[in-house]
View 1: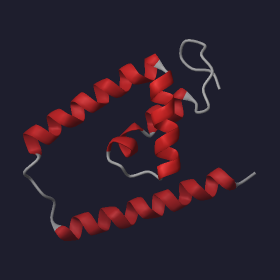
View 2 (view 1 turned 90 degrees about the vertical axis):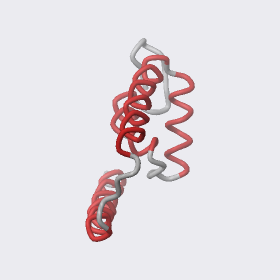
View 3 (view 1 turned 135 degrees about the horizontal axis):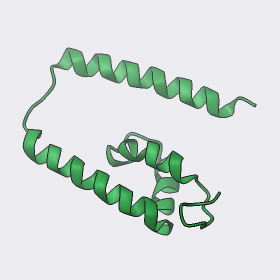
Length: 95
């Protein structure tokens, strides 16, 4: 697939940038993580965008890192994220 500068990549740039937070949070499968890492290694445009996302995430972690969400909230969010992940995986395999 074509990248931002006309470069060919296995993954589309827009898909990679949509999933960059999952990648940063280690919340995607190992296969998907490897694909995103390979894309970031090859695509300067996405790498630049990833660098910005990484810096913002690091800043938030420094400023708010000691705060923890209540256990009940974290469990509800995890359940919702799992449901969304199942929906996305199902859509990926539909013809």
